[in-house]
Image 1 (spheres, rainbow, N blue to C red):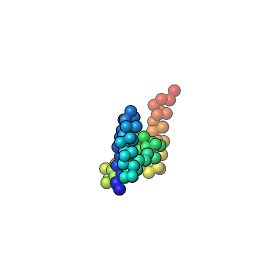
Image 2 (cartoon, rainbow, N blue to C red):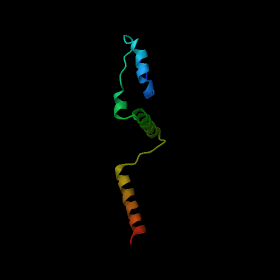
Image 3 (cartoon, rainbow, N blue to C red):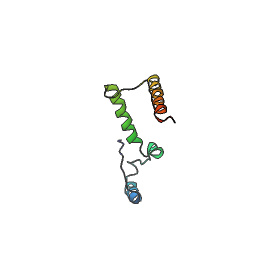
Length: 85
């Protein structure tokens, strides 16, 4: 058996389900739990995979928490100096 995804406009769902009913012994219709919780699940998954691949390949780099913290402290000091009353 293969798993396929189809997108059906809301106003056609009942018609599509009626057509699929005649194949009920060969087709199993289920809702994707991931999409019920997050309608953009697969788009986010693809984006995160791309970010991960970019980091692994060296196209993007990560910053340690300590480096990030130091950069933010420096940035905060710059803002304080710039906008001090």
